[in-house]
Length: 204
Image (cartoon, rainbow, N blue to C red; front, side, top):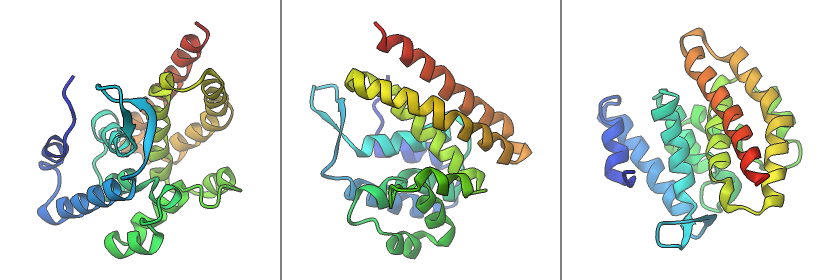
C-alpha cells in the first residue's frame, strides 16, 4: 500500500482544479496540519508510534475524492478542516471564513461539535447535502480505525452509528442532487457494511 504524502495528495487533485483553487487547498492542508500538530489518534503508525491526528482529516478528504468521486473546492477544503473548530485553538470560524469564504466555513460549522450540546439537532436542521457527505466520509474513516480502540469504545461507536447515523445518511440521500446520488449511495452503503464488519470483529 502506497504511503500517502503531500505530493501524492496534490498530484491527485492537479487535473481537477485551476492553480488558484489548488493554492486554496494547499493553504487548508497546511492549516489543518498545523492546527492538529500536537494531536494523535488511538491508532499506531507503521513504527508503533501514535498516529498523528492530521492523517485522519487527510483520509477523510481522500475518501471524498477517491471513493465518493466528488472533487469540489468547498467540500475538499471542508474535509481537511472539518475538525478544526472543534479540536484546535488556531482554526477559528473567522480564520476559515477569511481564508476560504462563507460557504466553506458554513459547512465546517455544521460539522463541528462546538458546542457539543445540540449537535445532532443542528445537523438535522441542515439541508446542505455536502455536510452529510463529509460526515459520511468522516464516519467511514473512524469505523475503519476502530480496531485500535477499546472494546467499550467500539461498542459505543457502533451503537451510535446504527441509531444516529444510519437515519442521518438516509437523509443524505434524500438531499443529494440527482447527479451525485449514485456516488453518495455507495458511501451510505459503505458505512453500513463497515459498521456490520466491525460489529463482527468486536465480538471475536
